[in-house]
Every structure is written in C-alpha cells, then in structure tokens.
Image (cartoon, rainbow, N blue to C red; front, side):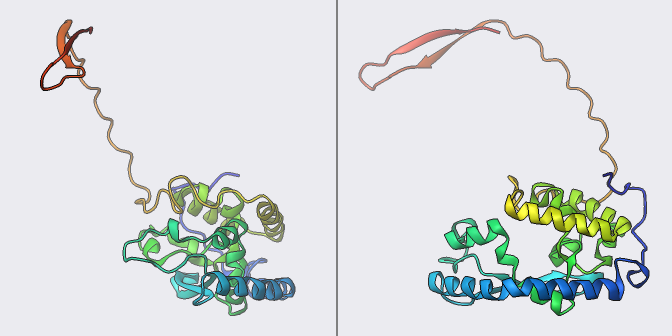
Length: 257
C-alpha cells in the first residue's frame, strides 16, 4: 500500500465522526480488553510471580510516552531487565532470559490492556512515542498524534522495529487517513500471525533506527566527482619481517601500481 505523499498535510479526520473513531471505537476497545483479560489476568499473575522470583523488585515498568494530541501518560510493561550494576551499564546485558522471552513474544506489553481500560490507549493505532522523539516531528508528522496510541497498528504488521522511524510515521499517517473496520480486522489478523512468528522485534541498527531525522529536508546538492588520481609508478618499499635487536632481517617487496 502506498504511504501518504510527503507533500500532503496531516490527516484531518475527526475521531467522533469517523466510523472507526469516537464512542464506537472506544466501546470496541473496552470489549476487546475485557475478552483479552480473561486470559491476560491469570497469565499476567504467573508472569509477575516469575519476575519476582528471578529479578525481585517491582514487576511493572513505567515509562512516559506521548499519547493523543501529545498528552503524556505512563505506559505499563512487565519488567524485563535487572537493575544496573553500575551507572553506565548498557541495557542489552541487563535483559534477563525471562525478559528476552517476554519481549520476543510481546507478553511484556500485556499490562497495556490497563492503559486501554483507562482510555490512554486503544487496541489499534500508532504506537506511543517517547516525548523526546515527538519534539522532532514536523507539523505534518504531528498528525500521527491525532488518535489514541494503540497496542498494535499498521506499522507493526508492516515491519515493526525493522523499519526506520520515518517509515513507521508514514505508515501510521496512511492508517489514520484510510482507517476502517475492515482495515482494523486486517491488522488484528496480522498481529496474531506476528505473535505466532515474531519478527522485527529489534532492528540491526537499534530499536528506533533512523530517528531522529529532520522531516522533509531538501535533497543535498550533488557532490562533484573527485579529480582523477594520477597513476603512481612502481616503487620499492622495505617491510620488516621477524626483525630482532641482534639479527635484523628485512625483506624487499615491490609495490606495483
């Protein structure tokens, strides 16, 4: 599906007037959260006990994210990393075996059903972003904040973290302009498949490759080709081989141009 063209403005659909917005969408979110809770609550209790047994400390990790219209809220996740042993310890070594499993299966995001119940998130929508990333958005990219952030979305089934942030923003803007009940069902089916065969959890370049990138920047001027380097005539250099203080040995080799 083509992404929204860079020259177009942000989506202007009003949530309440849209068939997948307002009270109808909110009711659907609560229904899905209630049904999912039948499995999520007992499963979450087991996960919480395992986290306490393997890591101790708090079970839930809270992080500030930007929600609808940029309003900040605390997103909830199961804790996947042990405490730092020293101040500058990187995150990767701190991920426990249980934490890696939770991330791979996306079970670490199970507590976000409570964010849905609280009205801070929806089941389907753009994933919530860190506030320090939102400040880099262009006016057009801020259209991504028109909806409640979702547990899953169009960008998640089209590449997740294996695509760059500018690409994810384009996919989210496309969803906002084209959202429908049929598209939401397609996203739910795609999410189920993704959970069965997890891909794109972490990209080679990091969790958020390509961000921040200034939006809609002009293409750089073409760089002139470098001048041709004249050919270097054959020369002779001396390379040391197994030289010692008492018996230096030198080998002469010819360097050919």
